Amino acid sequence: IIATGGPTEETILKTIEAGANAISYTPPTNAEIFSEIMDKYRKERE
Image (cartoon, rainbow, N blue to C red; front, side, top):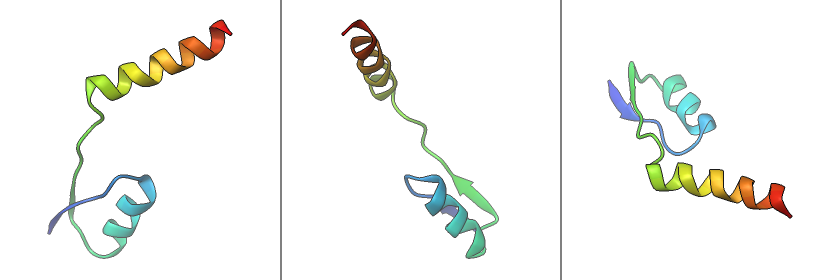
């Protein structure tokens, strides 16, 4: 059984516990990663 794990680690674990043999995972986009980096940078500069 191949299943999507959902957006969080908790939902991925629940999917595995429900019997999935493989998990389909979509990593964050470049824009999401860059946004997090810039948010951290801006907070450090304050």
